[in-house]
Length: 292
Ligand SMILES: NC(=O)c1ccc[n+]([C@@H]2O[C@H](COP(=O)([O-])OP(=O)(O)OC[C@H]3O[C@@H](n4cnc5c(N)ncnc54)[C@H](OP(=O)(O)O)[C@@H]3O)[C@@H](O)[C@H]2O)c1
Image 1 (cartoon, protein in one colour):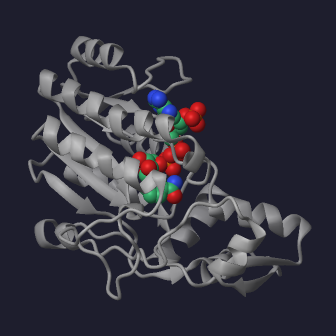
Image 2 (image 1 turned 135 degrees about the vertical axis):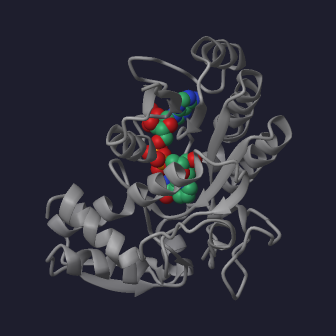
């Protein structure tokens, strides 16, 4: 059987690892894994290296799992943020188009201002409030300009094999009886494994365009933390605080959208695919991946 080659960038990240796990169960694809620090090193900010590498492999698709995700740090590291989150996907989109490859790129709920009252759909106006949100939005725009055969999937509150909120809470629970967590920011925790399933569903199709892709349902960070402790059998208490109180304790943090619930409207309109409800995906992650 002829396997289809897929270049994965950022293969060491949470999504990169989830894509690897899922696609390894599927004999139809051969993954060529790259990262800034992997056996095959590929820095997505280097246009010449990116275009020559993609040309050499001539893949069926490129999945961009690479990004600069440290939201607070980017407030004072703007150039690198634009390089990785905007110019990186631009380079990959140019190279994908040149090689006739499909391009899958991941974006974020932070492209929205966060002042809506109902979940954002793909047709709603954007208005990022942070450097991360602005540079990710610039990345989306570049992708749309540089190639036609693209899927952009906006996700949110991602957790998988890597640094994430779930692991931070579990680590804190080892030394704290109580943790303070904000309860006035709404969104949807999304497992990288679920996002990888969404990618695998879209990949063989020509159902191109912009999609929202988060788990179903919504919550706030404090209730999310409570669910993490409940599902992992911890007695740690969660003190609910406002973003204002939290900012006083952590003055350097980037502005985050108060409301960033995404409606997977385009997926619903154009595919049979549905994400798991966030509590179920979290339960699976804690049981199967963290083995708690
Ligand atoms: N994490 C979230 O909560 C969240 C929420 C919404 C959207 N997203 C989006 O979802 C996608 C996947 O996120 P994730 O959480 O899996 O990210 P992640 O765990 O931070 O992984 C990103 C990977 O990209 C690598 N990378 C950084 N700069 C690079 C470069 N110049 N060239 C090649 N690779 C580079 C990183 O390496 P180093 O670690 O060595 O820098 C890391 O291995 C991203 O597009 C992100 O913006 C994430």
